[in-house]
Amino acid sequence: MATWPTTVAEAEAEQDRLRTLVDLTDVAAPPRTVAGLDVAYGDGDERLFAAVVVLDAATLAPVDEAVATGRPAFPYVPGLFAFREIPALLDALERLTVRPDLLVCDGHGLTHPRRFGLACHLGVLTGLPALGVGKTHLTGEWSMPGERRGDATPITLDGVTVGTVLRTQDRVKPVFVSPGHRMSVDGAAAQVLALAPRYRLPETTRAADHACRAALAGRTR
Image 1 (cartoon, rainbow, N blue to C red):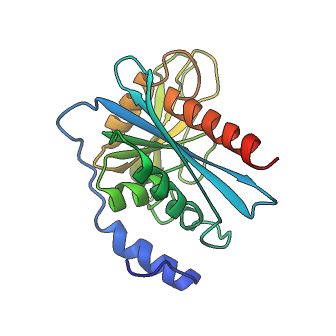
Image 2: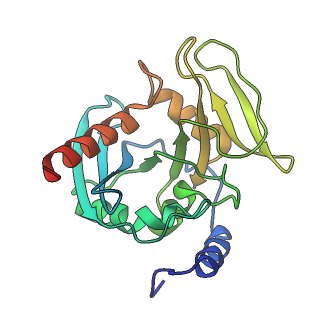
């Protein structure tokens, strides 16, 4: 779009427009590279650091990283949080030398009050497959899955399955996974399980969080 929304009405209209472009079909080829995206705030939330770390999908070894610094691009409004962070995340993505095959966002995709969370928004804008991994529940009905790695239960919104409550490790808190773009509900859960061989959070999320913390510590002293 030519200009970034500045009002709630403009932002909601943009969500409604872009939501029609979301594709919930898995891409045919498995990803060779996967990117974790995260944002950290400093200076009383007046400054942000957006990090993207690209990993080899097979080995989970890092192959590229970029960090962009900026300011929140929109006021804090529940349901419109993505508008604060997306310009900086897009800036970080443009700085990469390796184009990722999959975006793994620290947040939500379809499990959003308007069914258009950060992972949907970034996926549609970039055209890349995307999914969201939330640490906590945002919306929808769900029940606790079993205690073993791989146990899962659906998240439903208005009777439609929009995500998965997924146990990535035995007897640890589950994560809340949802597709963003070019990804199905089941496909998103399978990707996250593969990216979390040892810890609760996928390696993409852990790597992006580390990059954000390093940037925050190094640039706000």
